[in-house]
Amino acid sequence: MMRLAVLVFVILFSSLPVQAHELHSSGGFITGFNHPVLGFDHLLAMLCVGILSTQLGGRAIWTVPAAFVIFMLVGGVIGLLSIPVPFVEMGIALSVLLLGIALAIDNNLPQLLVMAFVGVFAIFHGHAHGVEMPQLANPVLYALGFISGTATIHIVGVLLGMGMQRVSKQYNLMRMSGGVIALIGGYLLIGS
Image (tube, rainbow, N blue to C red; front, side, top):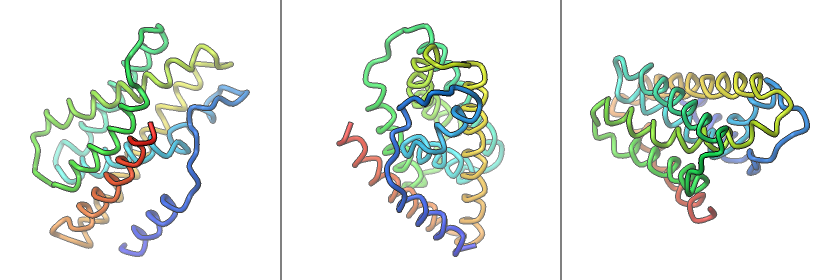
C-alpha cells in the first residue's frame, strides 16, 4: 500500500502543470470529466477533500465530499448566471493551501465546520466552470462530466486516505501528504 501511495504522489507531482480553464472545442461529458482530473489545482483540492473526510472518519467520509459537490453546483449556477465572485482563481489556489494545512494539522475538526469549509471553496471551483458553461457546445453533458470527475477524485482521495491509515495508524502519511499539498497550494497562490 505504501508503494501505491508513493506511486500516486510521484505521478501527481511529476506531471506538467495543466491549464484546466482553457476550453476545448467539444464541450461534452468527457471534456467536463477531464477538467477536474487534468486541472492540477482542482485535482489536489478534491483529493484533499477525500483524504480529509477519511481522516475525520464515520459519516464524514461521504458527507464532506457530498458538501463539496453540492456547493460546487451552487457555484456553477452562480457562474452560469454571470454573477461575479471576486478572486476565483485565488480562492481555488487558497483551497489547495488550506485543505492541505487542515490535513496536515489533523486537529479533529468538527464535521459541520469541515463541511462549511469545503463548501466555501467548492463555490470558487464551481464558479470557474459555471462561467465557462455558456460557451460550451453541450453544457448539460459538460456539467454531468464535471460532477462525475469530481466525485471520482473524491473517491480516489477516500481510498488513498484509507490506504494511508492502514500503513500508518498515527496518520503520519496523511499529515505529510497534507504538508506537501499545502506547499504546492502556497506556490499556486503566489502564482495566482
